[in-house]
Length: 153
Image (cartoon, rainbow, N blue to C red; front, side):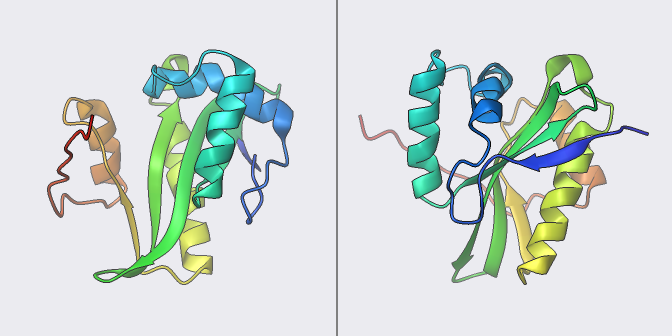
C-alpha cells in the first residue's frame, strides 16, 4: 500500500497556497508536458494563468516529502453532462509508475467530484499512452467520444 498524502497547491479559488510545492512540481509536470517553461518563475507565471481560467492543482507527496504525482483539474458545467470534473493533467513520476500514485490521485478527484455534486469525471489521454489507458479503464473510465483539435497558428 502506498503512503501518499494529497496536498493542495491551490485553494478552491485558484490562489497558490503552496508556492514551494508549485516550484518543485515543474520537473514532474514536464514529464507529461515537456513544452512547459523551464524556469520556476516562468512555470509559476504560466500556471497562475491556467489557474485563473479555473484549473486547480494537487500533488501526491511521499512521507519524506518527494512528489510522486500531480493532478491538474477543473470543475465546470456544460450542456451534455451538467457538472463535471475534468482532469487536464494526471502525472505520475516515471520512476514510480504502477505503484498506485495515479489511482490515488483519481480517487481523490472522484471524492472531490462527488462532494461538488458532479455527475461525471472526464479526461483526455494521448492515443500512444497505452499504459495510462489501462489505468483509466480499471478506474471505470470509458471512451465516449473523439477529441478533435485544430491549430490556429
